[in-house]
Structures are given as C-alpha cells and as structure tokens.
Length: 142
Image 1 (cartoon, rainbow, N blue to C red):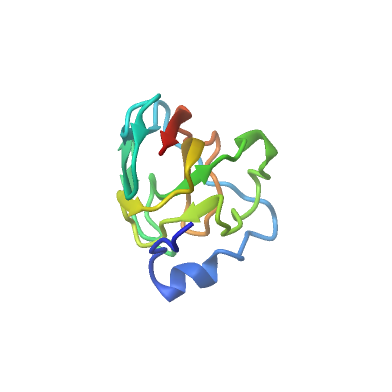
Image 2 (image 1 turned 120 degrees about the vertical axis):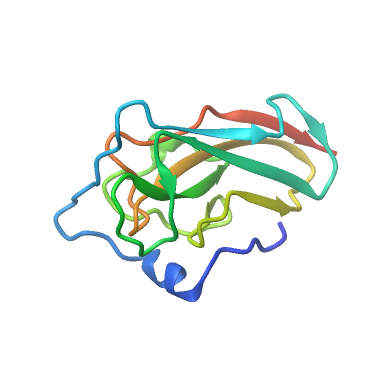
C-alpha cells in the first residue's frame, strides 16, 4: 500500500496519547460519519479516491480542542468491534489517521476486495461516546 498523507507531525505525535482516566468526549445525538464515494460494491482501479462525509459535527485537526468536532480515521479491512474505543486509535496501515482535518484521500490499495469504514476521533484520536462511525462499504480494486 502506498503511504498516505497523515497530517502534521504534531498530529502524529498525538496518535499515541490517551487520557489517563479513559475519558471520551460525547458525540452529539444524530452525529454520523459517511463515505460519500466510492459507492458500496464499486469495482475500481488505482488510484482510489475516498471522500469522507460528516453530519452533526465539525472537522478539526488533531490537537484542536473544540466542542463537537473531530477528525477522520479510515478503517481498512478492520472490524471496529476489535478496537479499544476508550483510548487513542493506533496509526497502522489498516487504521489511517487524518489528523490534519482532511476530508478525502487518493491512494493505491492492493488488488482485491476491501472493507472501508470511517471512525471519528477527538483531539487525541480517541473515538467519541457513542462512536461516530460510518456504515462499512466494500470495494474491489482491480
């Protein structure tokens, strides 16, 4: 997989930071992340452009303390039930941080079928309570 742009060095430094007491910021009722494009079931060729959506909250870079905001994390072939929602999300090839407040990415994905899902994180990359999670989509890259 090609390396994705992950935002500022400060945002990356925060990726390993969590609240010691397990505090999570509340998400407003009805807040919803979504993948605007590609469509579920799409067959694509590289590079793949993924557009992020968010309703009921605002997007802010990691480290920005502002009520009802967060930044996107793209889950690639990752079951959100396997994640610890009480601490900072790790930065991996399967959990891609967009700490700069990005709302889209263009990248190469390996050929095959992939499940994509967005999870909003707060200023410290900790998922909100309740988690602001998009529906999962499945795409095939030829």
